[in-house]
Image 1 (cartoon, rainbow, N blue to C red):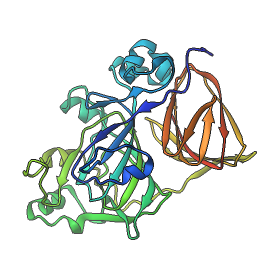
Image 2: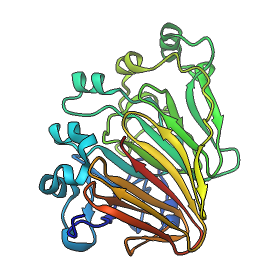
Image 3: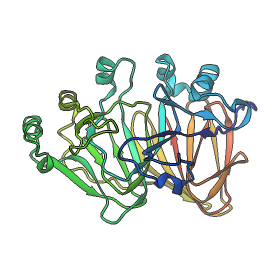
Image 4: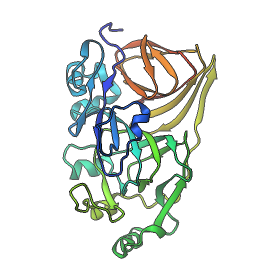
Length: 329
């Protein structure tokens, strides 16, 4: 254990996309006086937005500078590939979808590397923090949809027969591999864990215009290249119980080659002991309640980064608490 390493907190970076609202204020974010705010980048080291550390010896330093100083001690040997590409491996966001996002898809790593420079692909997952009655997502395609008839539907301006809708409610989680056709519809607050990428290919944007009064760009050819048309009417996957003892319940929500995310539910006063042994960073986020990690206080909605070389750590539930834990296997 290196005593110079500790749970890192960050100042969020806000994004004012047209589909946002003002609901992030309910999650404790200080918003500008006017206008929509769509996303709060909670832990980010991307050219489109980098968060700065807000506590301890690294306070004021951008995450990218901390990674440059600490290297694998920050991100872990399981993320050595990210250091070679000068990337932080993950990006953590909050999303306020007051209005629907575009119908869109994200590429995988190979396509992104071939067509988007040093950008990563984008596999992601969502946890629904709040949802209005009747809230839903578009996820995958309907039975019988092919690349050919989907392309014709785009030309005809009639995508609806090809789109698979999924109702969602608070507490649901959704695993979204690269290549998944999707759209977050209106009235949903989401926590998003994803690869560190900002590449989105829009298929359809509801015939609306951006802040400049012009339609936002679409990416039809790229979308047709990367959509997984084998992802037919997918269902939400249930959580997988890992353990339930001493007031600590762990459930695996999503697991892929880029990250594993658990939901950790703890009774008041319960303690979870873990170790960052050099293989992977860990990112913890409080969804409900209050907790502390090595005496660094956390409350809803707040995320922190545990450096891979931190060593032993202790999570204490100050109240009953629901947390997300993300790491790379």
